[in-house]
Image 1 (cartoon, rainbow, N blue to C red):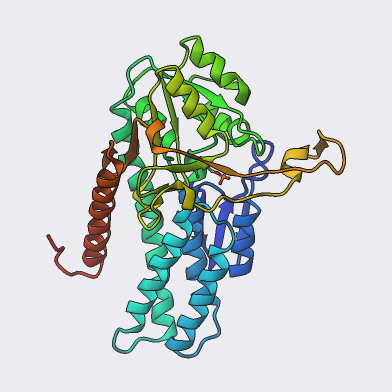
Image 2: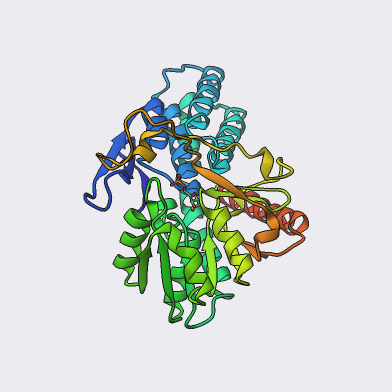
Length: 366
Ligand code: MRU
């Protein structure tokens, strides 16, 4: 099943806060509630957040009391601001809401447009974006699988699987593609403190998919690399700057530095929607800081003295020089990343325009 979907006029999602103990679907019928679901991490992972933002825009259009298309566009602009503010690091969110707002503006300019026709166009676009996410992930997975040798031991950080996307995943998608291709692989799964996405979500996904794996404490990664037990490091990203610097879950940087020290290749696996050519380098990427409770508690158990000062950045930046390649749905980008990322982004944009033209019944442009 999909991580996030539209049903009966509501945005529905697997509640990732409860996994692996409980599997529940939660439903939201307002933009504020959808924004809260992102902030509170009922849904998380850059592409999944993007799809949720798109459905949030569709919801805003259905729920808006607007009686004119102009008023509806104002409501949608406000909805975009609310959704974008929910989490700052993953650019997929503002990328998706911008795409939906742009679509609303074109639909509003059609002859005879009404709030209802614009709302219908927005829902169709959100569904298209979610379908594209799954197709993109499969392409990306197979692109990445090409560089993974039979018998490889991979080290993976955070959760980048079906749960982090609409389905299939980014870095875990590469692992699923290897499995579909019959490659014998084994995955070292970092637990990924403080929120334990590796232990709670990646281990759960890989066990369901019957991929050979071991869960490890985050601080075991270095010694495994030194012992020759890791062939490739693979993770996703929440934003990639124009020079190839990559923001991903806190801890990705130290793994990448250790991998370099031990001569191990490092791949980030990202849809082109995660590439932000507007930012020159990783220093410009906003890094989310989250609640102290994520560090002082594990679940409901207190693991630190009451009142201890805490610093809890959710992401870090890995400078481009530590990356062997950045896998996208348009192929693997290699250094110099400034050029290869720009090309991948342009090709993807052309693909979106051609698909949109096909949906409208127009002949695709070259
Ligand atoms: O805080 P999260 O769980 O949303 O962080 C997720 C990650 O860091 C993933 O690695 C990233 O979103 C890429 S996954 C497809």
